Amino acid sequence: MNWTFRPACSGDLPQIVEIYNQSVVTLESTCDTEPVSVASREVWFERHLATSCRPLWVAQSDDLALPGLAGYLSFSHFMNERPGYSITADMGLYLHRDAQGKGLGTFLLRNAIEAAPSLGIETLATTIFASNIASLRLFKGQGFGEWGYMPRVARLRGIERDLIMVGRRVVLD
Image 1 (cartoon, rainbow, N blue to C red):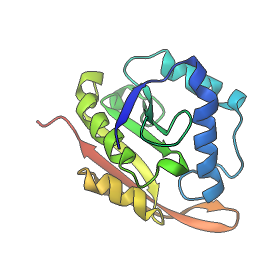
Image 2 (cartoon, helix red, strand yellow):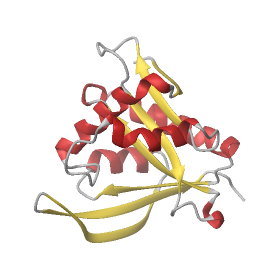
Image 3 (tube, helix red, strand yellow):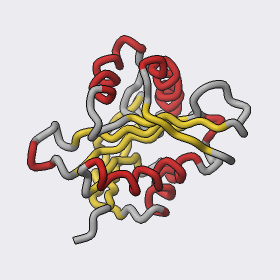
């Protein structure tokens, strides 16, 4: 598969929301229990467009019979934007269901690791449900270690979920 990515632009939000809402239905990668609207994501989206140090990337492929975007990766401020955490980014990675298992997650994650130092990011972190084996395998395959285990911290439609924090230092001391 031949993947490409670019910074998100103003017209991408509806497709980003569509991809995100696919994950809401599965209950495997977000704590939202109902689909979100484009309007509800506008502030989040505009904040990414307004900063160069916490970008939002979108990906696609000419090889995939998929109209539009195949996925996205976001770099967000860690721990409520407290200044001492500015060297760390919280990541979000969501793939269109038709693009999963085709190497896109690996492609985006490798590029994020490579780009992080130029964004002023020394550490990448994210949280993943313990039941989301594919995402855990993806991040661990790119050198992320398990940094924390939080049992039964979420309940989605009556199903309790454990959460695992994974992280990777990208700037070596």
